[in-house]
Image (cartoon, rainbow over all chains, first blue to last red; front, top):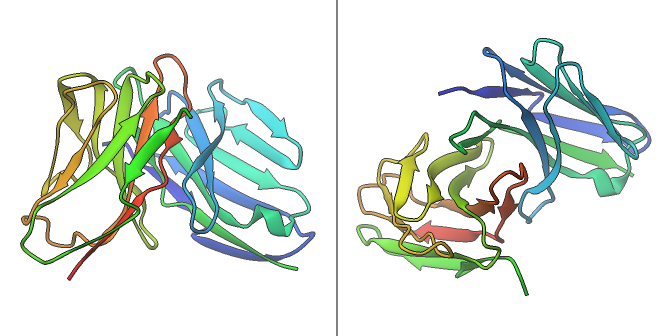
Amino acid sequence: GQQVMQIPQYQHVQEGEDFTTYCNSSTTLSNIQWYKQRPGGHPVFLIQLVKSGEVKKQKRLTFQFGEAKKNSSLHITATQTTDVGTYFCADKGGSNYKLTFGKGTLLTVNP
Amino acid sequence: DGGITQSPKYLFRKEGQNVTLSCEQNLNHDAMYWYRQDPGQGLRLIYYSQIVNDFQKGDIAEGYSVSREKKESFPLTVTSAQKNPTAFYLCASSPRGIPEAFFGQGTRLTVV
C-alpha cells in the first residue's frame, strides 16, 4: 500500500531554534494530515492539507503541501519545551477511510 | 463524557494465550481503527472498519482479529499466532466527512 516516509527520525534542538520535519510519498496523495503525540500520550490531530501548494499556519507552526502533492512539511519557529513530542504525518487515502501514518519525528528541546 | 475508551491501560498475559483489547466510542463515529506502536516504528495499522459488520485488514493484520458488531465497539483480539505481541495498542475513530481521527489513551500489552 501507499506509504509516507518521514525524516528525520529524531531531532534535538535548543529552545528558540527552528525545527522542520518532512513527509514524502512516491505517489500523489489525496490529502495529508499532521498529528502530535506528547511523551506517554496519544496522537492528537493538528491539521489536514488538501490542495496543491497549500500553506497553513497555527501560531508558530507552518504546514505546507507540495505542488505535486507528494510531499509535505511541518515547520516550528522558535521552539519551546512544550513542543516536545513525536510529530506524525498521515495519509487518509481515497474514499476507503484507510489512515496510514509515517514513522514520525521525535523532537526534543533543550531548555 | 464523550470520547474513546480503551481498557485496560496495562495488560499482562502469558505467551500462548489470546487476549482481547477493548475499544468503545460514544462519538457516533463511523470509522474505527487499531494501530500498534513500537519504538521507532511509528503507528502501524492493524485493522480498520468503515461501518458495522465490515472491516478491512491493515498493513500488519497477521495474528490479530477484530469484530464490529456495534457502531460503538471495535474489540481487537491478539492471538497466540502473533509472534511479537508486546506493544502499545491505540484505537481511533473518525466521523464521516471529517478528516480528524480521535485516539483513545492506549493499552500497553506485555506478554511474558
